[in-house]
Amino acid sequence: MKPYKFIISGGGTGGHIYPAIAIADKLKQTFPDAKILFVGALGKMEMNQVPKAGYAIKGIWISGFQRSSFLKNMLFPLKLVVSFFQSAYILLSFKPDFAIGTGGFASGPILFISHYLKIKTLIQEQNSYAGITNRFLGNRVDLIAVAFEGLDRFFPKDKIAITGNPIREALVISKNKRAIARSNFNLDITKRTLVVLGGSLGAKKINQTIAAHLPLFFKFNIQLIWQCGKLYYDQYEKYNEDHNVQVYPFIQDMDLLYAAADVLVSRAGASSISELAVIGKPVMLIPSPNVADNHQFHNAQALAKTGGALVLIEQDIDQEFEKYFNRLLKVDEDLVQDEFVKFARPNATQDIVGLIINKLNRN
Image (spheres, rainbow, N blue to C red):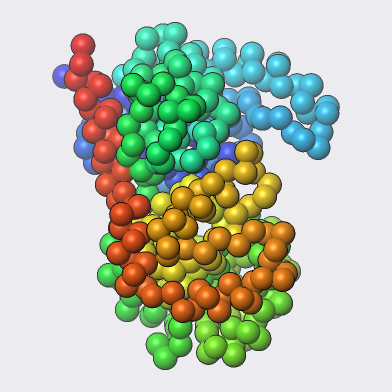
């Protein structure tokens, strides 16, 4: 029997890329001889991150609408047509047995053409409010793996499987790495640790708020690990001079970062929500207001219903941050773990691969 071939497409943000990599890793673990090819959007972060994870990637010429640039939007119809031809060439050359999309504009052309070439397909929707690319593909693909209830308002109900979001396997056991994490970050074991996550690029308002509230953290004898984002590191690296503060542009070892945390402040991207649910620690969620359909707010509300997450709207952050932080410190971590486990789906990646295997075995 010939080795299976898989095309995986998803990108633009880490929220699309890392689930795609997690699925690829599980497929490789399940089918060691499998050939896996990623397809991304030229110039986007997947073109760097996917090779770092050990996979080949081809780029296509596609992007979404640019709110700030009318001229760039004029190119969109041309990019779309070109991306369809590029996708067809990649698919006809590689001849995959299965095509998988995790969202982002690059997955649109690949999954669309896969449908017409009779290639078996699955899309994975991370958010509680489906993204535009996946909504477009919903009627055309074979399977739809989702992380939240209620997605049948966007997709055909008979195609949906509630699996949760794929997360990196190391995160599932991160709670057992506390001693290693403390050593890795050279933490004071007598102090509580606050971890701040604003996304890989950073969140301007969160960074401003954290900088303004450093005295509050020190008052509570709290040490800080602060991922400020690549765009803002030059502005905030000066705080590394304080032994209670560690500022990073980006942290690769997320399992150790989560293990080090006592409490967290985070954006509410779908992947972050899923990871936070698995690790089960008190968290203040500050949804980004600059995302399509306000989906981060809906993600945050879904986790907040468990009782272990606080949701602070960014427009209220100046007036309410201190009050919410005081509440965060009083959250019972044992209660959080008990409630989060009902929401978390740590076997999501395995379940998605199971759907793919079942589809492959059908004639």
